[in-house]
Length: 260
Image (cartoon, rainbow, N blue to C red; front, side, top):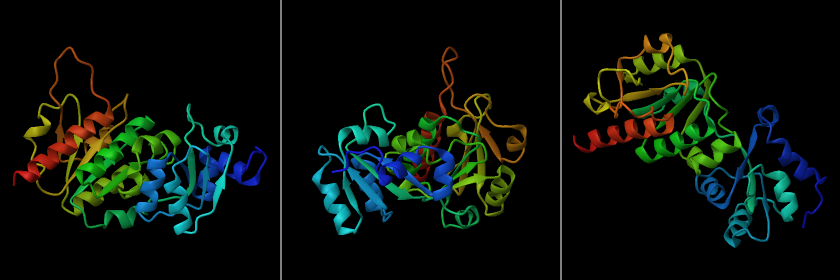
């Protein structure tokens, strides 16, 4: 069992808590049995796995079947590796999973999501989870969006980042122009839009566009979309966060397509 915090493997994992070092090595941490199991199930084999005595035995079996090195660690060492308030019993080092933007733009899907400058990790993780559930085939993260491999994003996605194809650092004009040329109807979520989301035809190929939590979508983005839509709410209520708004729009797409 690894009990020293100075162990080279432990130090390697600790460094992945920093974005710059993640970018350099192109690997990130997945914390918790569910996310790690999803990685294995999706064919995204971890490079190594840290387990405490509390970890499910099935994880070690999965790792051995895939020839992934397994390292037993003490609880204090796990607390050093993970930045979670209550560290899980399992943490894996996994290679990056994002897709090259041009390749993703050409993928065979009729439902895409564009997140322009979304900053909250929980919103991004939740949107990935919802996109997977609603059958979206592509998620584009524009420049200025929170890092896909931020620990809070990975946890909030509950393994969905292994099931939905994602491109990072995408330029807004490029992706919206590209989606338009492929025949996608580009629909922006705008709280002040006079048209309600359920009045917009989303039964054909469409791209849902969501903006920054505080600033919303810029004029350049709004000029490049085909439709603006809002979620009608009680006038006394505050606006919904991006994660919830995305869920409302995505499942409206599902409802319309089921009704065809």
